[in-house]
Structures are given as C-alpha cells and as structure tokens.
Image 1: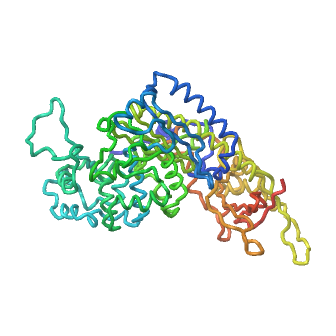
Image 2: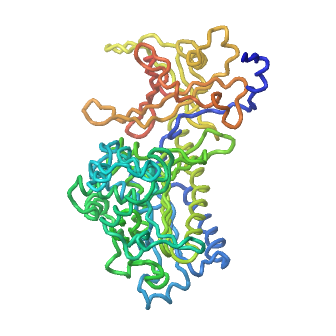
Image 3: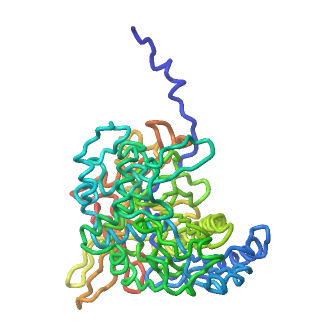
Length: 598
C-alpha cells in the first residue's frame, strides 16, 4: 500500500502552539547558595508573618481540630555555620494534659519533644546503609547477600513469572527505589471476601509481628506486582531487606549500625530506633495502645519504627545536605530520581517522593526539586523535606487526631513561603557580589612595572528581578560582540543569520570552587566557577513543554559545546577575595582576565 502523504498534508499535524521564549537554566542552583540567613531581615519578617498566620488560621481556629493535635515544625538551612532554625513553631493540644496520668509524656511540646515518624524512618535506614556499606553494591543482586533469597532463586519459578518474583533481577538499588516489587504481607479481612483455609493466612503481621523466617516464608508465597524495574510500587519490606543486607556486610545488628553511624556522630540525643525507655520525652495523645507509642515493628523496624524530635530531624537534614556522613558524590547520587510516576511533576527516589516546584511566576523552566518523605503510624504523622537547590529543608511532626492533614498543610505553607523567599535572597546576594562591569586592565604587566597594551574587552553582569542566573548584558572580546558570536557558534548559525539572532547569555554556578593561594602560601580567597548557557531568544517558543521531539528547553546538550584550544567558551571563573569581594573574572576559552571596576 502506497502512503500518499506529503509534507504539505502533514503540516497541520506538526504545528505546535507557540508562546514567548523563556530562559532554560541548567538543572540545579541558579544562584550561589545564600549565606547569613539568620541575620536576614527578610527571614525575620517572614517568620513573624507565619507566626501570625499559624495562630489565626490553625491554633486559634477550632475548626482545624487544634484542640486535639500537637505539632512541632522547623525550617532549616544547610548554609555553613547556621545551625539554628530559620523558623520554628510548636503547638501543644489543650487536651494533651488529660493523658499524662494515663500514658506519661510531655505537657508542653518544644523542639526536643519526641514523636513517632513512621516511614520517615526509611531516610535513616538509607543513610545508615550509605554511611556503613556505601553505594558500591547498589547494582548487585540481593541474592548474594540474603541466603533466603538465594534459596528461592535455586527453587526456580515453577509457578511461572506471574506468581514468582524474578529474584535474579532484583538489585540493591531496586529495593531503595521502590522498583523491586510490592512485597507487603497483608491479611485482608473484609465484607464479601470468600472464606479461605486457615493455612492461607499468614501467622503474623501487625500483631504478632513476624520474625525473619516468617517474613521470608510470606515473601516466597506472594506474587510480584510487576517485573523488577517496570514501575515504582511502594514497598515497606524492601527496606527491611536492605537492613538485612547491611547487617550481612557490616557484621553488626542494624540497630547498632544506626546508632554508631548516624545518631552518635550527629549528636541526635532525642532520636531512637526503638521506643524510648523514658516516656516523659515524648508526646502521647492518648493511651499507648491507641497511639502506638511503645509498639515496635519487630523485624520490620527499619521501615517505620523510629522516634525523633523536630530539632534532631532538622539536624539530620543539614547533615544530608552538607554531606557530613558520606562523600558529596554519594549525596548527589542519592538526591536523584530513580523512576518516573504518572504525574509529570513527580518522580521517585531512594526513598524520596520528589516534586518539581516552580520558583517564579511566568518562568516555566525555573524550578527546584523537593525531596520529601511522609510518615504515619498510629496517632503520629511526619513530613521531612529537602530542597537541595536552595540548601533548605523542613521538619514537621504531628500527633493526635487530624495530625496527618495538619502536617501536610504546614509543609505546603512553608514551601509556598520559603522557596520564593530564599530564591529572592540568593538573587539579591548574587547581585551584590557578582553584578557589575569588568574590563581588561592590561594584556601583560612587565616585571619592570611597564604596562602592556589594553584590549577592548569587557563584561557586564546584572541580575534580573525574576529570571534565573547572572545575566551577561554585554560581552566584548577585543571589540567583538562575543555574546552574539557565542550564541551563533552554539546554534551553528552562519554570519548571514546573525541579524535574526536575539542572543542571551546567562551564568549558573557549578558548585566548583578552589582556593587562591597567596604569596605566603595562605589562602587569598577563592575561585568560583560558573557555566554559561548560550540561547537564541528570537522567534516564538513552544507552549506546554512542546511535543514529543520539539521543545524549548534542551540547554543541557550544549554544555561545553564550544571549545577553543581545549578550553570551553562557557566556563567563567570569578576570583573572590578573602573579604568576599569579587576582584575579577576569567573566561577560560578566551584566556583574558577582566577586572571588576564597578
């Protein structure tokens, strides 16, 4: 059959909705991380506004149920030397006191009050694994570390692939990224289900809890949800298996590994792998059985058993963002998605739920990623969030009826408030530090004090109110408009097409810095690297993210795309003095040092 469709016939099918072009920053921070946030008047003002809003709309509003739930919430930064919260608020339910004689516990909630955190335990579990075992075995099959799985592998899949997991394909990172299979052992009892033989029911679960042998016996009978690495499906048991692997490799009980590798090094004195011996440290909004305070998950403790305070959880967040316990490269690998979800704004990590969140209005591609973990067990709820691009995080703990709803509502309010606030502070600090005019002082300065010829080379940098990165508004290299030329080279446009170009050059921090050695061998400041993105902003852009193959935001493919004499044209290195004042900038491709003059 002959296909008689030409380009003309196809034209209506390939027409995309147009929109104004927007800058496409590289993924990651668009400004250097802000500093001295605790001294910022903006932060103080935002905190006061939040306090008033929380009092009026949560604590003093009986419709929220505030008479029955308690919470502790903190906003923290990983900025160097800033270990106090940017904002903290604690609320004690008015009816909490009536339970003290029954269950003990605190009478007033503060930053050290201990709550259960449910699945936020998984963050401690993964960090413990990384700190003791590392990520070198992530791609190895779990059967090499779990003899019970090895036995199941030997038994084969006599029941077929629908009923038997493909154990050989399940690797350690599959457990971390929720990509193994749904291995929850659940006893379902409900109206309308057909009766079963007693042998069909597992002998353990919530009460009594399972031991290791019973756990694997149940796993052996449970069919997989999908083949490994097909789609993320939430799994508690995957993290239990992860703790078993850590015990096998490290030769110690997982409880001791958590204590020795995370809790003790970070000084987390209000964090517990099992129920605290002293109930007076915690908030207990009811009887212990009703709240689950003191109830341990047995062999499944690594998935949701832990207890902590808002202050300790914030300390954990700073440690993760600062790579206190593991190497920075390990942290960077950890804070990445492992799989997609059905929501284009949501991906899945280890064990993060990751959201893409817009920073500024009308800037489609200007986003940060929130790495979140939500936990719930009994009367307790927790939200833990990290935003690496801003070195920002939230620790939110709640107890009592309605605690889950209030914890997520608080998290949403904090994200709406602090993401644009921290971005604006970073923008303002970048403007003070880097914005200005840079020009060539001399091609060469002789040892005898003579000055060589000057080049007509300069760079002007500004920071725009809403757009990302440092904006290069003017860039001359020996009288050549280098901004225009760089964009043309990056886009492979000949000289004839120059008039149609609308060049845009923006600089984004790479996170790479190194000291400048002084004459006496001491540090004379530092060099700070930025990568430029060369974009043609002329013509129309595409709306709604484009089509299957056409889009407006693919700048990552152009990094180091123009190289001159083995040095990239998009590498700008700023020289910052020991006093924090920028002295000069060098474009490494052009090999010209431009001194900041204003």
